[in-house]
Length: 447
Image (cartoon, helix red, strand yellow):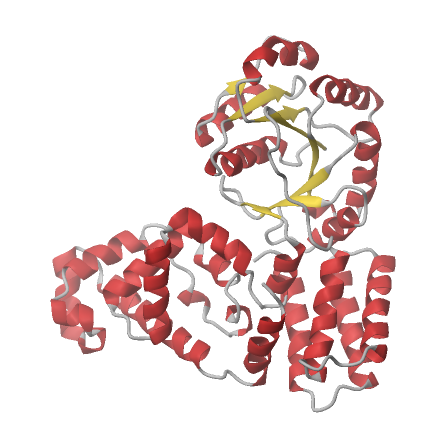
């Protein structure tokens, strides 16, 4: 999960609110200290942390409880709203209003610009745009070959000249061909923000390309140094936004998030993995609600639209919530979800799942397992598929032999089935005070 440690810490803080009998100044002080500790451990700037928690405390002590909320809900709502404001409020979306729409990528050495160029190309291609890549990194060995391979992987053309050492000449060479595309993503050489000669070069490139978006690609693991780098690049070429890469599993990502969100360069995308699809539009509301275990319906629906039809989604949803599915339904559900991405990432987008203590094996379905499970089900009788509980040890051995799989793999499928039923029961039940609170609170927030 993105910022897993920070998310866990914040969810524990909300649990403390949910389990408390009274909302008083003592609880608010404990809450503030917990949030400070969580953000500081995520490498958020100290002064920013104190400014944020000061606002939370002032609102919690002074604001009257809204008629539609309890005191607990009001307190959680304040935490949510202040964290969203802290990370950019409504967020920013790139709209393709003119063509060709040019996006210039700049950043430090090793920040992941070329990989990000491919992700952006895939992002806009999936939305129906004709996309091209332009390689202007004339300094790094093999840079041209890397962007060429990147373009091949995401099936978009790449314009480059391996023999030319002047990025301006490369751009001018292909300027007329570039005009045929909807979106043109320009990859530049990595540089130190304080390196004078390379800064002069990016200033010339910026002036010549005249892009609608100048995006700074910044690695989340550089921590609080992100703010200084963002400011320097902004002075050099007028940064319009930031793409924070390596957001998955880094403790320092909080520094990059907060530092960029309070500069003139808001975060517009986040990289959450290494695959071409692992790029998300940065939505502070959804991001914070995911951190707090409340899900991110907007991001979930976006992924669902790309993977399955609306009818399939509704049908699977009804069966899942009824808890009356069989092995075939389970397979269809997991196949549909796999199209949307890793199950653990999808689960954190579903409201309520973040608060459940789900076993990791229930969400850990590796590539290739689904294909083996399909062979297992081909060897099951109609009765066994419809009622998996009747599958005994003897039947497991028969199914394994018939499908060419191991007994262990058959048992894994049955275990996954039972874990899924367990998940449904946990979701359908009250799940304690926290789940009741999240249900009510989720209705107040318009996710």
